[in-house]
Length: 351
Image 1: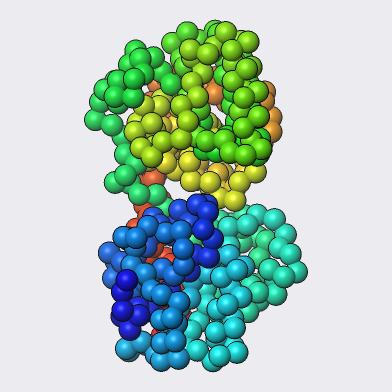
Image 2: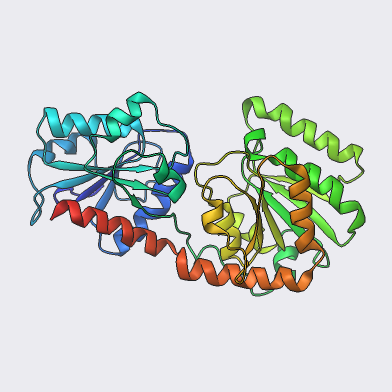
């Protein structure tokens, strides 16, 4: 816990289950604090080591923080916007509200009602900004380039995970479900691997609830194709940066995505990316002169097979794209840059 009198920004998290939004908060808060932003979290489902305030501390919001006219409440969900509006407009507490939107679809009438009452709005991509009907600032997500980085020795990185260091690996990481396109990845590997004995594939991630049957069906397809020893379902891992370090190519096969950090995680590790044209992927992956990968049509198996083959069959191009991806993330997508851009929005509201 921190003293709310020393807090200028509150980042609420009103959802217990881990989600992409929660993960964003967990990664950003320590970086924001390191940059001097006086921010703390509020709510359940967050690590104990994050600076936090209690609900009863909100009584202090009637008072200004030292040297500031107000505090900032940074909401990322409808359920976090509504109480802030009540605190500001009904109880007249001294706060201003920022909302970050990652949605890439038309907002409901209720969401529009809430968003129109924000003091500032952040969009996580240009695509997201296009769905907003209010002025906004685009701040792309960043990546922790200290956590996600190339291995010193690629063969040793594979060996540590029990993988054959003489093989090349293409991976697909994330929740195992149709929306994430796991079936497209598996089917593309079933098409590609028989003619490329030097390559194998890794599916890292967890299937939950109704998606367990989907995962079982995919595993059956792999067995029937005779590729059970080359298309590996390794489950969910807390050491996911280690698995990126073992890869030579990454595929992001999503049919739909709000933003999607996995291409950045791969690029920061020096791994080229083949990604579908969803979420912010086309804003992350560079094509052309400084190629870091390819953007392909969503929900298109032929495009995925052809896109992966481009790199699997051209090792110099694979290596060049990996090096370009590492340079691009270091220059444009470090999480510190995201934290500074968000901090500038806070400063504008607290002047």
